[in-house]
Structure formats: structure tokens, C-alpha cells
Length: 546
Image 1: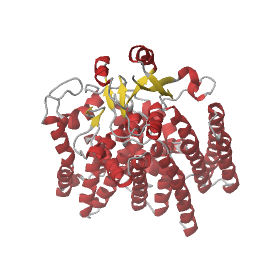
Image 2: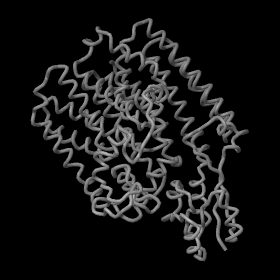
Image 3: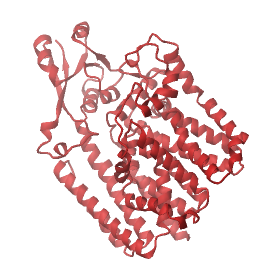
Image 4: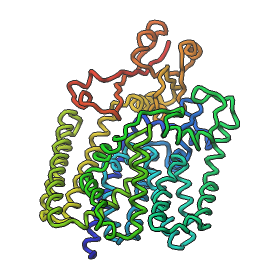
């Protein structure tokens, strides 16, 4: 790879980072993002780093690390959506760096740069920079662990410590199952290449010991909050062990669907999820997977390629067989998908190059049309500017990348991602967030009643209000408890439309401000269409009792 080509890829990556950074200045989306942000806010406000609380009650679902990272950011930069999103954004860049490093060390620098570019420009990675959850952290930690264990496999022992630290961090984000994508690829690689002695080497057993040593902060926190207090009611039960939940119920309980948190599995779920989540690279990736099974390609790559392919394959299979499935899980193996796609791109025949050059051009046009249609129907402020950018990038793609080459395919594909990132982060998501009633109510309170005592009446999911309103937000679960706060000074209630008539009649409630609500992570055509949108909106109010 010549210097100019390297600079071209670095420029495309740099622009993508800048475009993606616009997501840092948007709001936090419900339910998961706002829920996690409110938990981290509680930690920062009360300096309680051991206990996780939601709505004032003990919360047992996710491990502590993502909340600790967000709380540290709050301590450094203040409690804000920017401070919540910043750690996730930085770890997304770390994941990109390790994607580059792993591909470079196994293959070459060019493959590393293309892999990093593909990963960073995948649609679900772009979405995760705005809708921040836990998966981008897991992606960074698991890939970093794989990278350092790969280095350790080459007899560099200090990488055992680094790999184990990152593996432990991944566990403290999602749970023990992350050891499957970390170690699964290595174990299958050793078995297929008949390196059976690797399984007995002391350094790998030291790695396991170090992992369990490094996760002791999580184990200690769970023990303090739950195992020491069997009287607490969790999942409508007492005698709930946080350690048992961490090691079994949160992982295998979800997989077998016999734990306290259940789901409905569909073995094809992650097949169609990959199609949209890995845009604009989906068609290239699917062809690359088929291409891997051709015998002539089995010997074309270094044997260590098995680590990447099998790590992705067993994780994808695990996800597909699980009864608890969510689309953002696929993020964890997108780096491996990116490397597989980058390898295939560089070995395209002349005919295949022309075919994919045409396919990516069509995808570019279709994305521009889809963005324009959504902008017109939604009719948000500045939708004309959004349509301009939607048209601009395909035009630039046709002007800058004219010849059917692998470089042109990459260039046009990345420009599609620029278009998607700007549309989502600058125009669409900020417009959609206006229908997140809790966030809007919290911001209005901070401006107009900054010293009020905010309470939520019989509504369990006001996570964005929890985060955006200053201080602690308390919950009232019945009208009997409402009587106890009826005469409190400076108390403002956040209520649903169903409760408004009763509060006006029996409590002489004064409406301070009304807000519209929609479950914005489940978009439908009726909501996107401005004309039909009022029919799917709910209404919430801030009221004061007299």
C-alpha cells in the first residue's frame, strides 16, 4: 500500500469521526439510554459506587462498569447528555483502533485501515454513538482482549495481563458469556490446527485466574447490595443472590429462557438484523461469508484467520439460539465482520468489482431517496437541508469515485455512511427526541422551576425525567401515598393523561405544562407521517396540587 492510499483511508476515517461526534451533543434516548444515564446520575449524586438504584429501588440486571464510567464522566464534566455519551464514544474509537491493530498484525496495514473504516461506518455503530447503551463498551473490551491474547499467543506474556484485564472489563459490562467470543475462536483454532498443547499451557490458566481476580470489584458490589440482604425483594422474590444472577440467571437464564428476565427467540432474527445493522457493507459481507467456504480460500489467508471467523460464528450462533434477542447485541461481532469484508474487498475479481461497484451505487441512491422521503413526511425543522445533504453525498461519490475499483467501492460506501450519520445525528434524532416527554419535562423544569421537588405519579418508565430533572426524582405508586405529599410546598407531579381528570377534580390540580410522548425507539409509519402522528401520541403533564 502506497502512502497516498494510506492517507486517503485515514482521511475518510477522520471525517467519519468528526461527523459521528455530532451525536455527543444530542439528547439521551429512552428507554435503555435514559435508564442507564439515570443510574449513573444516582452514583454521581450520592457517591454510592456499590449500589445500583432505579426509581429509588434496588436494581439487578446489568453489571456496574458502564455506570461507573458514566459516573466518572459526570464527576469530571458535570451531569449532562454530553458527559454520558463521551465515554461510549471514546470506547468506540478504541474498538476501531483494535480492529485496525488485529487486522494489521494478522494480515497487513491496508487490511487494518479498511477494516477500521468499515467498522466505524457500519450503520449500527453510527446509531450507537447517539443511542448509547452497553454494547459498544463490550465491543471494545472483547476485541481488545482478543488482540492482546493473540499477542500473548506469540509468546509475549505481558499481553496475558492486558488481555485478562479487558476480558474482565467486558464481563463487568455484560456478564460471563463474553468469554465465548474472547476464547472461542482461540480454542477452535487450536483444535483445527492440532495445537492441543496450547490448551494445557500455564499462561492461559493464569489468564483465567487473572480474569476472576479483576472482576472482584463487581462481585464485591453485588455481594454488598444483594447477598448480604436476603430480605430485599428483587423480581418479586426475597433471598435473591446477586452473585448467582451474575453468573447464571442473567446469562444462561436468558439463553434457556428460564430466568427472571425472559424473551422470545427467533433463529433468523440476527440474519435480517445483520442486513440493516451492517449497512452499507451488508451485501459485500454476505458474499464474503459464502466465499469463505470455497476450498481455494481456505489456504489463501494466514491460519490465524480462523480465530476471527470462528469467534464471530460461534457468537452469532449463540445469539441466534438464545431466547432473549435484541438487535444491538450484533455490535459485539461487527469488528470481525469488518475484517472479513475488508479481506474479501481486496480480492475481488474484475467482474465482481464491477458488480459491487454497481450495487453500492444503487444502495447510495436508495439511501438518499429513503432519507428524503422520511424528511418530507416527518417535516422537521430544516428538512430541506437534510434532503440537500442526502443528495450531496451520492453526487460526490459519483464525481470522486468514477472507475469500478475496490477503492471506489469503499469511497462510495463511506459517503453513504456520512449521509446516514448526518441525517440521524443532526436532523432526525433531535427531531424525534422532542417527543420524549420526560426529557422535555425535565428541561422545562430546570428552566422554570429549578428548585422544585419532582415526583412521578404511578408511571414506571420516566427514565429521561429521572436524568434531566435536577436532583432526585421520587415515585408515588398509589393515591394513598399521594395524600402524604399533597400539602408539601414546591412539589410538582409528572402524570399521565389518564390521571389528569381525577387530579383536577379531587386535588384541584393546576396544569403547568403539557408534553407529548411516543416510544421513539419503535418508530412506525404513522408516527413518521406528520399528518397521522397525533393519533399515536400520548400526553403527559406537570401539575401542582392546591
